[in-house]
Length: 205
View (cartoon, rainbow, N blue to C red):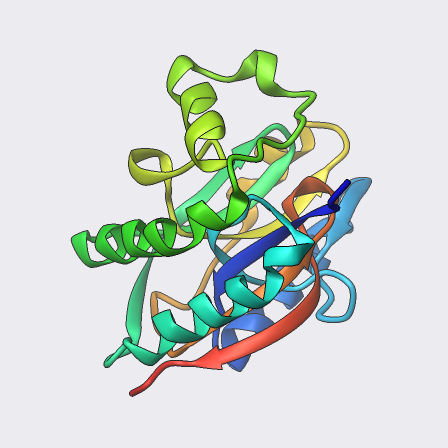
């Protein structure tokens, strides 16, 4: 039986944004018990594009497809800060989604979704999903795609869900806009974390 591993194709934030996100995550992890906080060693800042589970025998095709997508990117993607959001203990920095982001997200799904070979991951939380999210899981291997996709950086997840809205209002994010010029692939862990960078792909700018 083939092994399936969850991989995440991401926008790789620039170094200064990575470092800033880590500082914010570490700062607010002190306010409660967290499942994780960003550190740049075991938990990496990232902006998810698409993150289902793939069979290991398709990994090389997956890497090649992401390389091809990066090669066709002729300009960086601009991300504008859109506030802090909390849900189920998560604290995330949101960024505005543009029509350009939507088109790129759709392209990534078009290229990568067939490599799942129809595999659907087992989820303990699926009972909380909407009908649209359940359909997305079946068709694309992830619940938040297309209209439900929103670019963001997850800063941390508190074990007590009430800690997130309690402390999030104090978070000040001082980077109103930045550009990304790299894609990357990470192996994922629990709570939507990126635990290991597998490969990085500079855009053809």
